[in-house]
Image (cartoon, rainbow, N blue to C red; front, top):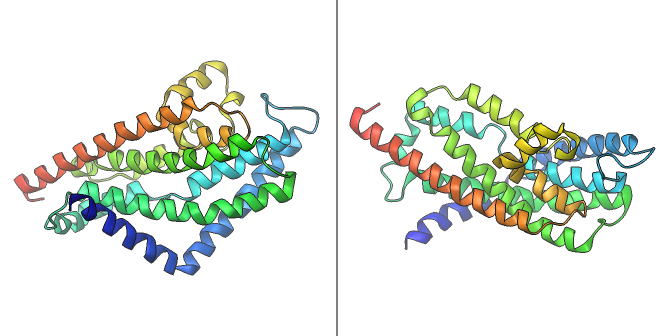
Length: 258
């Protein structure tokens, strides 16, 4: 029964998203433009040889995978959660029998995975058309669960971060900083191997790498199955953190009424 309280809203959110054809077309078009441009730039950069151990073919598959992982996410999720807390929408949701944090995590994960399912074949067409099949068949297969984990980690961490709105109210600065960290330290725009050694080691130890770099590196043929276990570990950490922060925030609302 408890599981259905989460799967039912997640399924409903997924169906609503699929019904929004215009929205899916818009996300897909943005994804195509960004992927084609970035992949083209990286192929040009490898004209005289590999960059940081990646060939042009590998970087093309890296980019289409990294962009799919991030384009599947609502880009303003942290800010929107903060707005819902301030507006009182979360207070209304507290009247439901299920925990607000759990329902919101389930709903947003359902939406993100649905977007990802739409973007995956689009990315495959881009990569295949530009440079041929993925560099490694095993990597291509492992990239699918890695992408699902990447999306789930991203959604969970955004909820954990957005939970500060129960106390600070304004989450716009947190949203802005979070996005930039995913762009650079998460490996969305470039492989972490391109970064200076110290920064690369720092980025590898942070959760942002689990959100784009891991599935992208895997799809590029640099297969390391242990990285999926790292993703799973971060997912557990941030699901627990998000539920704890939302739980504390809900108790605060009940106590102070604002």
